[in-house]
Length: 240
Image (cartoon, rainbow, N blue to C red; front, side, top):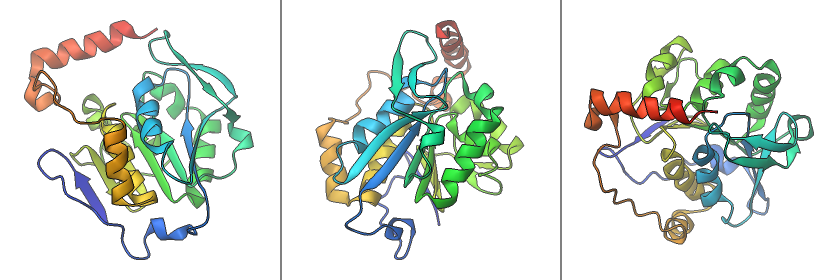
């Protein structure tokens, strides 16, 4: 099944009978591993975390190649990875964020091998922003529809994926979210899949996620070339 959710196509999506969400027992806890690496974007990781960490029976753990403090793409903020990759053999849900460290991570064979290993037994393998390019580098997106940060769309084809517009795109057990804030949308979708829609709706209220931005420039199509160039420059200037 392929599900695309965006501003013009948003709709409620119920779990498929016998689909991935049914692989876990009702009495089991659900483990979520969020991969951190040098140069990840904070909200890519924290957005899904903030939605999922309070869902009943869900435990979210930050994981990195080595446990400890991991710097974000600006270098001004760090998050702590509680676990190292070699100490995490399995996770029900994998979340891979994007960021300026994406390219280096795409070339890190230790991380890519771990992603492939976790994916073999995961219920959901997911990404936010350019994290989808990391999944692609691990060989997980070949022949699949996927989305990513707007400036990275063209790279998906090089990784064997088909760019598909939407806040997030679900293809089998892989879910890819668009840039940064779209990880919150994906997190709410996962909350519904891992629990039920009522819990997901309650979590949307709990984090008061009711977007009403002061400007209508949240997509490259709406913003136009001049703002696209400025946005990329601002991102580049903030990188450590």
